[in-house]
Structures are given as structure tokens and as C-alpha cells.
Image 1 (cartoon, rainbow, N blue to C red):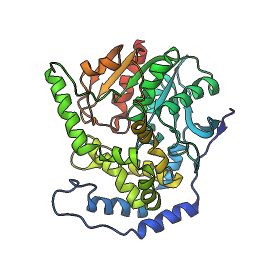
Image 2: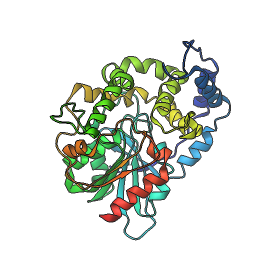
Image 3: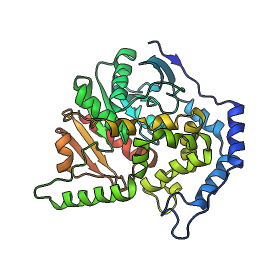
Length: 368
């Protein structure tokens, strides 16, 4: 397992093919009524695709990503991509950052420089996600990803103890590491809680009643994407792998629904950041493989098989898709040492509020 330096460069042919496909998009109509109510706004999608085709500077995004130390290593049958940025202080703590869906390493580009003041930062691309994908490779669920990341940190990079942080699937991966490999973890920091969605309370408190309302709303209005990705991922992959406009519309709806924006999604996450992320999915063809953690979860057991007893911190952003109360969280996370309620930010915390997130991560691990 010898890492090789990695340099991101998409071919002129790939970029020309993307522009051609975008120019030939066949658009659906849209029902009358409130924009975004039934899915991605047609007017917004058209403007986003026009910008992607004509004004978006992919080469600038490549240069931005290539400003970090990147590697690939053959591990568990795949070529795992990761960023490995050394800390700028004496004896920096190793810190593993795990992204989620529909994210990528792009989520952490503004966070990494803030964290390397105190940490040596390792940011893998999840197996099956952009830059850790090639056609025909084995699929990875949360359990397999956590095992691979443990090998990366210990067998490849030589760390015997490290901190870990994540949101979305990254929170599941981080929590799985905390439950299964506690001897490796200094602590874990989460901006999403991987708790069982239990609706059974003997005498629910007001916070627990609000949690039940959240869950009901999520099942009714928010979870359809997870159902299709968790039951028929292959069927969905055909359209999103063939149509960049379809791919962008599928992903940007989540940026609109899950961010703390002020009516326009770009008030929370820049258009260039969204398209850098979407472009990685497009160029690598990884969207179908990225669905697999949903399929693995729907077909198997809950990926956090026991309680998580390592020191834990949670940053609660107000527009997170689900925000369980502490009484619910403590059934899974038995050693919560820091709980921070933020006044702004949403599901894509590293993109929306990189400074707030980095400061909270730093404060927690410095306290340990």
C-alpha cells in the first residue's frame, strides 16, 4: 500500500462533451404554482445549466483542488483518493474528515486551511464517490468505508490515534469508527447525528414531541430521494449518468432544500462550489456508485451497531435536515462532552459556515 501523488486534470474531450450535452438539454415543462414545491425550479435549472456551459471555470476549480497535497493508494481493491495536509504547529493531531452525499472533497476546501493551524488533516474521497471510483469496482456501505478509513489512517499513514469528524454519511462513518474502533479515536466531532429514528416514547418531553414532528415531516416530504437511492439505485443511475442537466437538477435540489439560504441558494453556497462538486460527479461517472450506502442501509442492519462511548461533540446548525434532542442523542452517544447550538447554517456546514465549523472542531479537540 504505497501512496502515489495525484493531480486532478480532466481532458479537453471530456469538457467539450459536457458542454455539448448541456447545450442539447431537452427540458421538461413545469406545473403552475410555487417554484421548488414539486422539485427543482425549471427557471433556476435553466440558468444553472447556462452558467455551467458558458461561464463556469472548471480549470480554476482544478487548480484550487490541486493546491492541496493529494494521493491515491490501492486499498481494499480500489484506488482510494485522499488529501493529506500537514499541520502548521508543533505535534499536530491527525484529524480525519469524512464527507457525505451529494458531497465530495469540495465540501472541505475552505475548512482545511483553517484546521491545519492545529491539525494534520486527512480528507478521503468516499469509496464509490468522485475520485475514489472506477467503473466495475466493488460497492461500499458505511461499515466497509469505516474499515477502509481505519486502514488508511493506521496501515497507510501510520497514525495510532486520531480525531474524526463528519456530517451526513460522514457522521455515520465517524460514528461507526467510534463504536467499532474506539482505541484509535481521540474523539469524534459531528454536525449530524446518526441516531435511530425511534418514534416510541413513554412520556415524551416537548423537545421529543418536536422531534416526532420533524420525523413525520421528513418521511412525508423529505425522504423520497433516499427511498429510490436505497431501493433502485441502478435505475436512477442511467438518467443521471447520461444527462448533466439531470444530474445537476437532482443534486442542486438538495442544496436548495438543506441549506440556510435567504430565498436564493447561492446566499448559502456559491454557484461555483456547487458546480465544482457536481462536475466531479459528472466527470468521474460516480453518481450511481455514490448511492450504495443508501442501498446497503436499506437492505441491511443499522450501520451503528452499538453505542458510541468515545468523547463526542455535536454542532447543531439550525437548518440541518434532522435535529434530534440531546435526550435522543444520548441513547447512542454516551459521552457527549460538547454540544453547540449555532445561529446560522445548514446541512452542508463545511461549505456554508466553514469558520464556525472549524472553530468548534478546534475548541473540542483542544479541550481533550
